[in-house]
Image 1 (cartoon, rainbow, N blue to C red):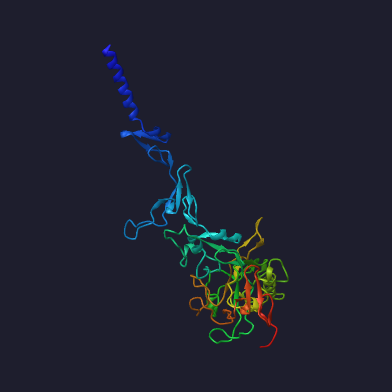
Image 2 (spheres, rainbow, N blue to C red; image 1 turned 60 degrees about the vertical axis):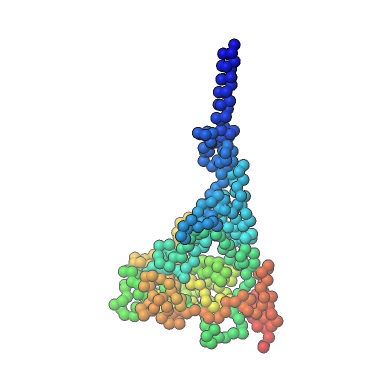
Length: 418
């Protein structure tokens, strides 16, 4: 009998020992029970019994440096949120968003009038100007000098609003009012009489990739093959909106659909390309270009057309026109047109006071892309001011409240003498 009691006690003790050897809650099914009754949790689970979820990690917004100039290591919820252990999702603090609170929120979601862009994205679209190859084609800034790139730790974390054209403010909630030239001023900041903006369009082709378009000696010129086809011009207004013209014939020859382009002149018929350019620019919607003058400026080995912005609504320094000569002649293109065609190398470009490039595209004698004369290209020096400096802008309506004695949507018309 005593032996049976002893056996029962031994079995009971063993059972108690086995019970004490089990991990808490059997690691909740999210881990493995290891030595010393300790759970080794599966990925994305934590806690003594592996019952708590782990939230996403991203670069910390603020932490203690761990080495010289080294900080912003990975942190749960990026140190700007609280982890919900039941769901594994971050409850971000105000102003932060993302699976790990990894991004700054844009204020008011840009009010529906803009796009929320990271600092890296915004930097890619900024530069001192466009860059062109020898034929006038815009080059990708990502592969040439002049690219602005921001690569610090917060490049993909900080965000800001990039407003749609016509809107402004940190949250893009304010409308922009019409802009114009101050009707009372006649001189620029240097005391020199105000002038209008002049840009020059160069259209032609070459047989040898000549970069010196304005060369004066015959030896510097190249033989020009006949060119035909169309091009368009893109104008970027003061509000950041881009407007592309309807297709313009490279030159006009008896009103033929495909035009013949000569180095010196159109072989027959009236030279009407300048009129096509003027009419196409003035036909842009919303009075993007209210008035403009275009004149043929002669030809060396290309035809040159001077564009003068004469309207008060387009006073001051203008964005450089872009010449689109490659064309888009497939279903779905808008506008659809055949680009400049040539036996040589077609080219079309625009130069103003400053022409940014890396390929020696400017005329002989020019320096750093500067135009050789005012008639070849110059900055407009009039004001491009909100309400023409003669009124107050209502950011809710986008309308100018003109001061007494001034009228017009941009208050650029004087009604009384002062």
